[in-house]
Length: 318
Image 1 (spheres, helix red, strand yellow):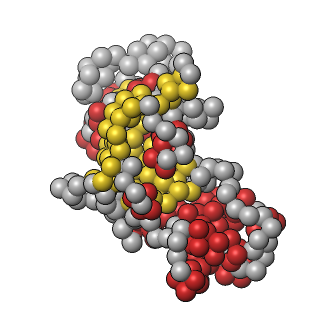
Image 2 (cartoon, rainbow, N blue to C red):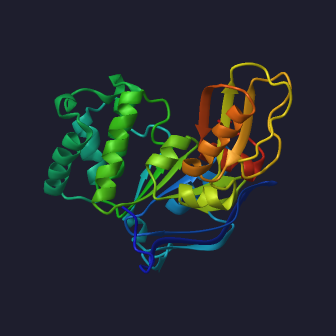
Image 3 (tube, rainbow, N blue to C red):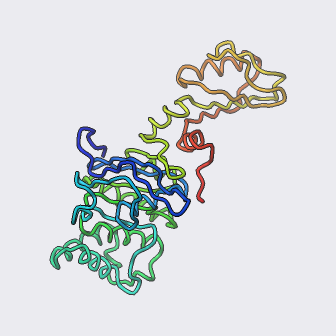
């Protein structure tokens, strides 16, 4: 659910910086999130994503810059209660049951006993763990612990949820369950800031993608906007022919008009802007050169292409 652009930000960072010795972890970062918006911070480990989350939560002190929550300076007493944090590390009590963990975190966040009990019932249903309410969390799988971890972070119904790599180390089934849980929060109007180095997670779970590398924001927009601003919307086309080429093909009907292919190779590779019109011309031109087409691949530009274009590096895990 995308936010209306005329609304004031619910979370705003202006020129924030943080260093650890000679390492500049965050370098002049400015970012604004609006109500109900889901934003993914996409970047490799070590890019500064977790440090930024810790600064917003007050776990790490900024060197310079300012932050506001709901229009108030982040130093305002009680304003951080609007935040919910789900850290990358599992922050649960292994010797307590699911229900006891949820109740404890509700009380930690100032809920009354009655409100805590109501919220626990909601969380058990939301996580799909009603039948495991009385089981010790310490014996749960990684995916189940992640679900409880996520629920503990939202027991006080925060307006803004900060998620630091929420699906690290979980199985595909649990990952999809977590995605559905996040979609319910988004539908309810919760603003989400999600850090990840997983491309599909950034694309599926956000309205906006903010690419971060070496402590800087290097791009900000929807996937389509990032593609247009960097690699462009043209499609990569690979055509496999029935035998090795005798030489480059004359592409009379292709827009570039330049010979394509290489002698001895059986694949012709090029880019086209409009698949619906230009692909037909391209295939016709190959046949006009006396070759039969045995296979065609059309590749749309991806976030991986965007990241490679902007940084010169593949998106890495470490």
